[in-house]
Length: 174
Image 1: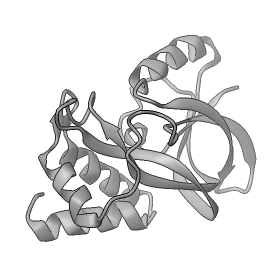
Image 2: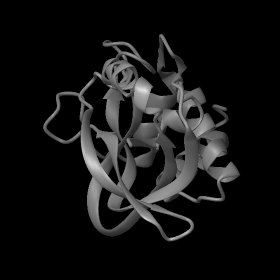
Image 3: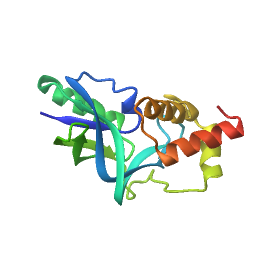
Image 4: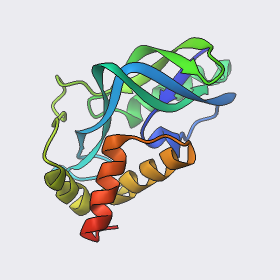
């Protein structure tokens, strides 16, 4: 039984078959727009910004856990490895579900040692980068907006994601 935890684009576009889908939280990790995207939401000359998870004591990250069908596991993992190729590596995490149960799962994290990890920046700098970046998967603005809207649908408030969306709207770049 393999659970995959999505906290970014997997929330609205898993693009793989699954047996079950449940809201879940991982503790000690925070979602951050600290990963450059020169391959999906930007190009090498003008990379976008996408989310990764950063370890931070006392924090939580809400997302969605997908239970893979056992017969599809190898194919789905191969597809995810390709999709998450730009510095993301699968790691094991404990997934806590709304009913209090806990399962071991996998998520993809792009840590600070990968070449596309760009870390924090002032809000206006991040907004300018997101507003101007477009890649093969579409505009970076769409990524931010879809992530914020999906979190809204899940009744999850994420300070950075929602703060960036508000700043983007204030700038008139929606």
